[in-house]
Image 1 (cartoon, rainbow, N blue to C red):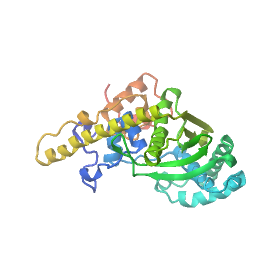
Image 2: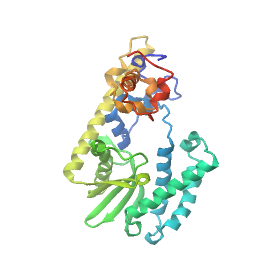
Image 3: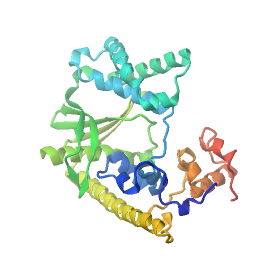
Image 4: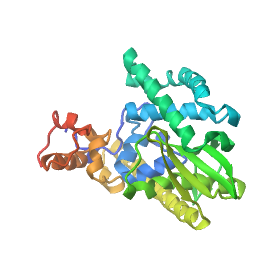
Length: 320
């Protein structure tokens, strides 16, 4: 490694914005999820603003998401396969100008056709999965930045809210792979938080929340109760308190460095959480602990052949 991360509290000391101006004033479900997964990764993403380039699977899911968003703004009888082609063309105009797509790099014509075709097939599968012409949509892409959950200012966009028998349903489109069973409860917390945000705004809790993985034609659905929502909101509020405490240490560190004093170690407030998934972390090159963990898995033959970390290990090996 070119520098020990334990001495770099600010991952981007040369950033155009000072540290204190990069401190978030709200917490999103994705930010909450990342904080509970790995606090160091949260620091790199939300404070360091380090790049996290999307690969083809994530971009494919995002494009399918954009098509579905358009489709469900139209009357039910127009949510058909032929109309999905029209929606795809509309979505592509905006999607092709997105920074993530441009950063990915325009593929060759054959790959571009395949990309669009794969997204279209994912959308068609999604339409069939939930009998789209019978879905009673209340709203699409509803913004929530005016509610507080568990003492934490909340920010999020609810992909879709449906009217169903007995109440409402939250639907969130996911761009990644379907999580293994042991991780599904954690992933479902995002839609439970969206349901809690609806309750905070309207006083009425949606009774069902769903994660939809259109590329994989899979839904994860959970019944939402006040007890479940309250427990998830309590976790969300606790995470916000932890984030604020950690960032207070960070802001104090900025002053220590400016005064020529020894800063508090980054491990104090933003510890790492080394595990198998470090092999897919976009910030692995910045993390000694993650590299050490990945190297161990590689040496034991447990690092998956398609893990992005293999490219880094070939260039930056560290002693076990």
